[in-house]
Length: 68
Image (tube, rainbow, N blue to C red; front, top):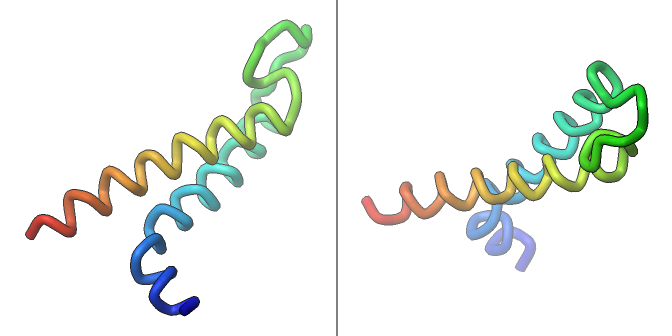
């Protein structure tokens, strides 16, 4: 069961993981000093945003690979 889930959604999950890590790194290195930025004012905001973007990118790549 886990193997089939990983085969089906592995690239999406990898995109979510990489995106989340990238979001936290973005927050910690660049961030928002004033606290008025919607995405980068808190680490949870940037981590979730980048994780969603990574998942979307992973699903886009996954769909392209399955059509061949």
